Length: 505
Image 1: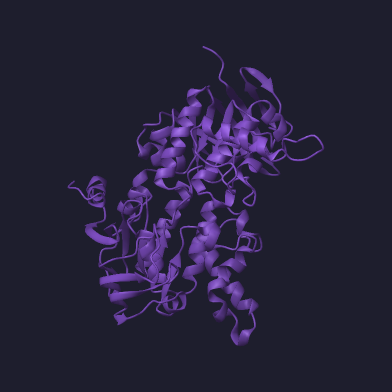
Image 2: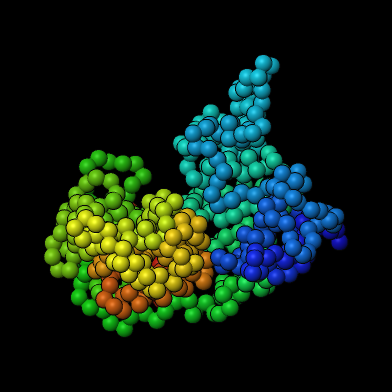
């Protein structure tokens, strides 16, 4: 058998007293999509940084085509044919597509002028090579997240053409964009490109991967086939069975906290692609977690944002009551006065101030409480931060570091803790575990169930069907802005999907 395209043997990497990699073996074949799974802190990023030339191993060996190589910097890795696309794309939004593709390697005319037409012609060829119809003159800022992801792939392939490392490439993509990305990945693999695919979305693994390596605590926990049961992947990831991720459901529920009776949200101005709630009737009671299911465009996010007043301008019609009292919910202030808190699906874009310290992010929602007479109380601030760190086990336990430096799971804990500090009666959650590893998901699920047990009502929208089925007491199915079915938690997934798609199970 021929040597693997890329292999790592016995990789060890230490950072001070912390051993990030403990003798890792990993290999990639030409034309293979090799999924790499692991919780935050498992060692995936460190391993990829070794392959990308960001770090050098303390022990172990890297080989390409069976020949030992040493990378002292990313340029040397790129020269050897390895390119990495990180979760935070290295594109410049204010430049057009062609300029991004040639950034740092611009084509020049005699006299030192940029040859913009030549760059756009070449960019068009590269985009068309993967059947992507994007005008090279368009600003990156005007592209969808999915289109930006593909532009980043084209840019990476212009540096290297043998190994492509993709870190969480689908974290912010729609279902359609994910399908398009997978199609591109398959075509690249068919040309002989080896792809390392890092993801927290276990349900995607059988769709795209040829092989799966799972890491835990700096070691390889196992190598398996992509069609391995999800329960087996979870056991390798966290060292415990899948059913232990979801806490026991509520045995009873209290008073009704949210009541919608034939409620509709009338937009001040129609907006294409925004599905307003229409004739919705549902309840959320104290002590229970209610899930919102539905295909893309069903109106899950729109319902939550309209309840919180953070969506498009408009007004509610029909019966809308919180804790038995009719409310208008015309703004964020009105929602918060009614005891409603909201966790957005975009923690980095609208849920956190990434450059601010963790502690300051946590107290943003309770500024009035910790600032009597308009002056910040250091002791009250410290108490609030201590409470959040204790309740959500945010790591590292340092309130002074920038929240943007935390892992995705710990950032999500900060977003949740920030809203809980306001002592809401009703918590709205939109994709609460997007981009979060399995272990952190389990922690978040346990904390949500504890909060519900304390009397909080929770309404959660999620595109992850196992999450809704395992976590929620009831599941309300939306279609075209309306609720069309309701099921008890633990229902068969096919039954929910059938209702969401408008057909019998």
